[in-house]
Image 1 (cartoon, one colour):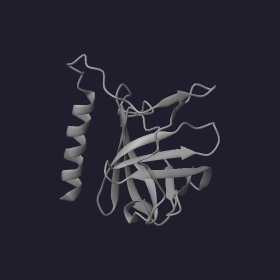
Image 2 (cartoon, rainbow, N blue to C red):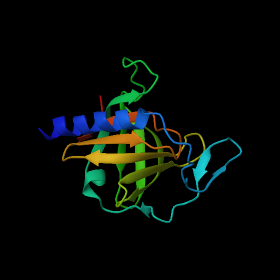
Image 3 (cartoon, rainbow, N blue to C red):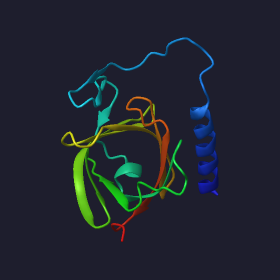
Length: 163
């Protein structure tokens, strides 16, 4: 029952996020800068808690179960076979199937329910997600900070890496 409620909430958020703005008032955005490779970097980390034992994030690893991106056919699943394992010390490991492909740091703003992933190196962009969760599942909804607001991902908790 919780999964149905969560998916309904996800659908409503998706529709709200896709609704065009009806006002010309400019919204306040966090301070950002552009690196030489044109990656947007959020320089406002004052409210981001780096690492913490949030059991809903750090208990076991998560498989990327399904995703939806505005403008992409629903049959495309670019996150198929991916996984992420977040540790309480603020680091994470991520990969595809049995292989670890990169590491990084994560931060979470408990009040805003926002997760930021900061991969090590420059070959992967930072991402920021609004988080909804229950005992066995999370849904990440992209934010405008790093321009991934058209993406939603469903993740499921697991003891093992995907096969």
